[in-house]
Amino acid sequence: RAAGRQAGVLTFHPHPAAVLRPNPDHRYLTTVDQRLAVFEQLGLDFAIVYPFSRATAATPAREFMAQLHDSLDLESLWVGPDFALGRNREGNVEALRAFGATDGYTVHTIDPHLLGDGEVRSGRIRNDLLAGDVEGAAEQLGRLYEVDGEVVDGAHRGRTIGFPTANLDVPADRLVPANGVYATWATVDGQRHASVTNIGVRPSFDNGQRTVETHLLDFQGDLYGQHLILEFVARLRPEMRFPSVDALREQIARDVEAARGLLQDGP
Image 1: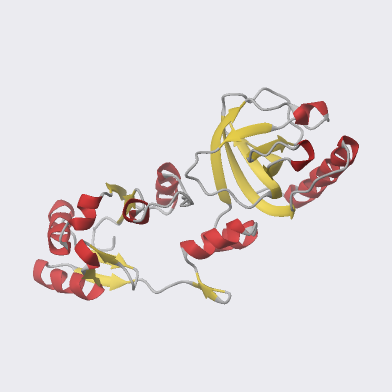
Image 2: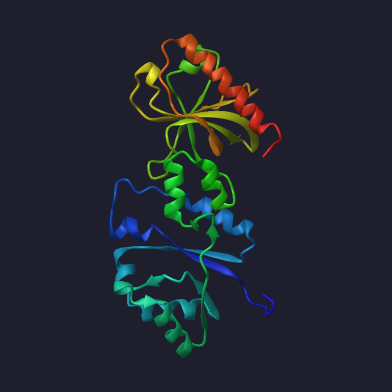
């Protein structure tokens, strides 16, 4: 920017692994829209979402980089130390630097960011979330982990015990944290509300189907059909089976107070 250039990012979608090594258990940490919002918050001038396919993977690295250089008037490229692109991953850092020397751009590597006892990587973040460690995931992300979706009709059991919940229809390809009860922020219609979120199969009702449902503290209103964003602050407890509805109601009341205490100072 000091030289009058623009700073931007190129991201592939779908994830290359989802195309080349399809796995029904693969889940995304962000949607494309969330990714673009983060890039905007970082102050980047532009972002390119490049459609990834098997044809993309089969493109010679030299050809791909020539197209990128020509379309962007590329001056410098920053990648991770183990980055590679193109056919057979032939476009590693060494190859990219050779291309750049010919075409007039420089290639730099970004050192891994160390946190605690390891590097910050998407795999580590996924493992934290799958273990319910949303605080560890947030520390690596630099923000609270979030999922979003449409509020859909549910079994209405929460309302019958005094704690109405919004059932969230989360896209199937999104990573949802481990089953349990969490202190969360729920944003709907631009308003952020303290909330308690349960993820799981509701064993006290023998439901069996995994759901994401949240109770908004001190909220009155109809949320059906609205888009809701959940930000995970802390895990309060694992999912539990209760001997009676009264025992469940008492525990939810304790969960609400625990969440209120964690969230009282705001986001």
